[in-house]
Length: 357
Image 1: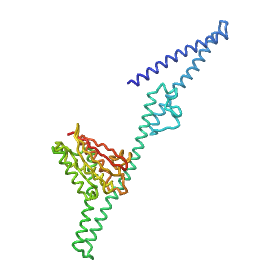
Image 2: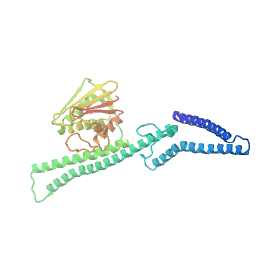
Image 3: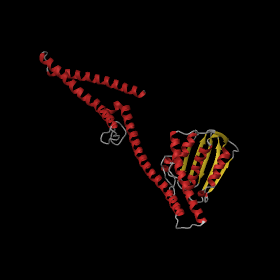
Image 4: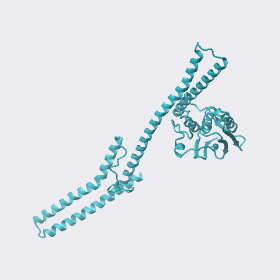
């Protein structure tokens, strides 16, 4: 509203100044014609009228170019935006090497600046869509590979067990079945991630909140993470100065979120990394997951909770779906909380979960 008022005021002032300038030019033209034709009569009258007409024509041509140039730019800019052309290096309302508008464009300053910001936003959105599309295609290819790999194992071991020409020992059969079960569990985890992610995104799931002791609950989740085979060479600990905190939570979903965050810190850090989980309580309850591992750069931190992102800070190949961290973030948001991540390369990462109890 204020921008509109400023634009209208500027146009009104500009119009009044233009009328004053036109009046001065007409007066000057009359004076010149009278000096050239001092004798009163038809010749003088024709000369004065011709001078006034010439002043009007030249003035309105110059005024039209001055006013019309930015209008043509604005209309052209809108047409280019409608055609999906968000950047135009050839036509710019700004002076070279600066952010100052050229003089004719200052009359429509707010409108031009809004159009430029809109153009930049649309260009960024377009680039982001392209990046996400590329990431999604790579993610789909990765998921296909991740599903195909355990399926190949399952099929291979099944064919070995069913092969009539071999007489397998009970120990060998047990080993084959153990491999089949392990690969089947991995496939189930992948499919579960896919299903849960889409349910969370579409908010087609009920959050079954129940009251419980958050401190004891987190202690058990930390114990589960510490007992995970992938954490065998890591040091996992839990600390808190608070004995009990009563909180409303979805036991299954919150466990999934916390485990995703802890296991992510384990698998992406080398052996010997210390993972510490502790609880603080002030205005809100904070669950802090801190490690002294390899840390992450700014780009990884910024994209950590993006869907399909499968970045890694180690040489280890990514075996996840690229959905685990996004799922964790969605679950915390469903509990009216939020996650904050701070990380320094080679110094470690701190993930803070804030929950309103």
